[in-house]
Length: 326
Image (cartoon, rainbow, N blue to C red):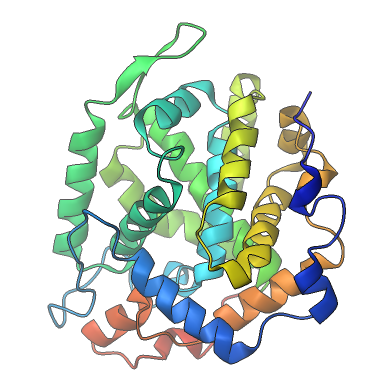
């Protein structure tokens, strides 16, 4: 059985701040928070600063005209899609054990989020030389991450099959978050996101990554028997609900976004993991998530690596905000 939701977490009823307002915080407040949080999340403690605006003219691993550049510019999509990806990842016991035994999700969840977010931004928007060097360091670091699952199965963080699963779940999470909460993406667009991301996935060490929705579904089918419920999945969800990732005034939004992440996991997997409807969005929350994600897709932030990368390659700062992917 899945753990019972806590009575004070809003699962039994709406978070009162949002319910009384009936809308999101004012746009200036949301803009200021997004600007500040984007800047802070790209400066995790202990990580070297990354200059996405230099050197002028250096290309990234992904092209400026790619769908990936347009989708990943949205910080709310990244938060929701990234959490959804981790929830799905943790259903695989080797990945779950490795993440839980060798990461700081329990002791420093915000720091872990920041480091993961920075790695994602560098992979997508960073100068190619910087991105390739960072990926090489990650691969080297992961080479020492080994262990055994509670059921006795050995695992290695650089196992190509496990890396393929991590890549595929990430691609699923970000694409589904954008399509559900910002603008619907058709099959061709979903395929494009997977195809665009495959070179970076291979650099990280993934093996036969899916290049289309058909390939993604085949991978999910092949993994079904290995995916299982675990108390650690519910612990992760609780950590992400309570970690001070958002300022106190926006904490109800954070909890709602966590529920939005659960909402986009495949229905059959939610059932298998015990993630009942109580862990997903309320009907009244869906419009609020869409409003927030839609606003985030239109607000040009100076601190956003997407904006800085556009300037680096000689494009207008608002280049990615001029049309919507479909």
